[in-house]
Length: 113
Length: 116
Image (cartoon, rainbow over the protein chains, first blue to last red):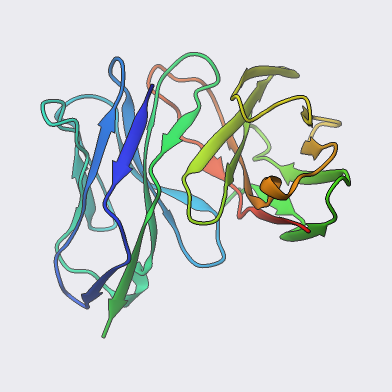
């Protein structure tokens, strides 16, 4: 079946540090890939997405590139801020059916001054 | 900005009781979903709903679960006889269309269900 694997958290960084959160997937076919973010007390918000191989999704300084050859979609940001502290979820989805999303376990990011 | 809302934010119930979790999807959306996240585990798909019918359901979504769109705005998840293992955060989501690529799903803040 389809699955998403994310690096374990929590990840603790100092402000302005470089962020990488690893995400790899297993899927039959060619899914679309997503990063969702959950700030404390809030719902899941779509951060970025990529719908085909070699696409780069970007938003708010975050970016991720859909790598079919390594089945990966790693999230990166060049300089994190305290306000980026949240839980980040990698997910995949297909067209057809109910368009369900398959999520990873989430990675908590803590950014300190 | 339109958003998905869910009520209540926290529900405590006794084992064997029925609970109804409520969601108001974004008003022009056509597709509705429920997911759950048991503490420390993955966000899991439960069910998707379109045109007043279930489109797809997971193996978790057994006969104890049901969904309904009782009016033009609400989307509910009912658990008929709760079990301890139903304790989780339940997320509602909606999307506008099944685009050729998987559509963006917009999530509510979740309802934390605690079964005692």
